Length: 87
Image 1 (spheres, helix red, strand yellow):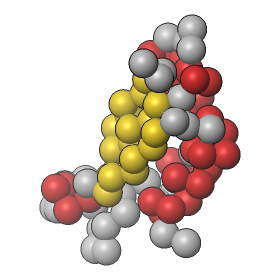
Image 2 (spheres, one colour):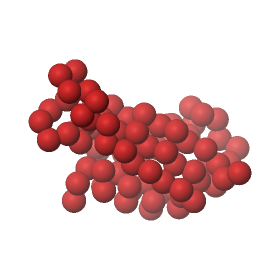
Image 3 (tube, one colour):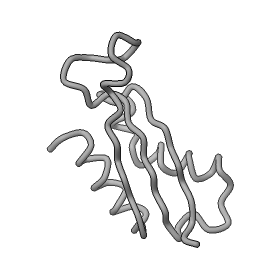
Image 4 (cartoon, one colour):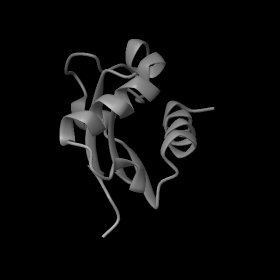
C-alpha cells in the first residue's frame, strides 16, 4: 500500500471524515531536505470531520499527528494540514 493510501486509511478510521483529500506534494520539493526519488515524502491533507468540533487548531493537529506517528517517524518528511468541521 502506498504511503498516501496508508495515510488516508488511518485518517478515515480515526476521524470518520465527511471529506478527505491526501495530496502528494513531493515533486514540488525536489532537491529540498527530506525529498527522495519516488516521492511520498511531502503531503497535504485536507480533512473535514465532526470529530474536530470544539477542538482548537493545535488540538486537531496533535490528534492527526498521533494517528500518523509511524508515518511521520519514517517515510513522511512534511505534512501540511487543513483541518475543519462540516459547515
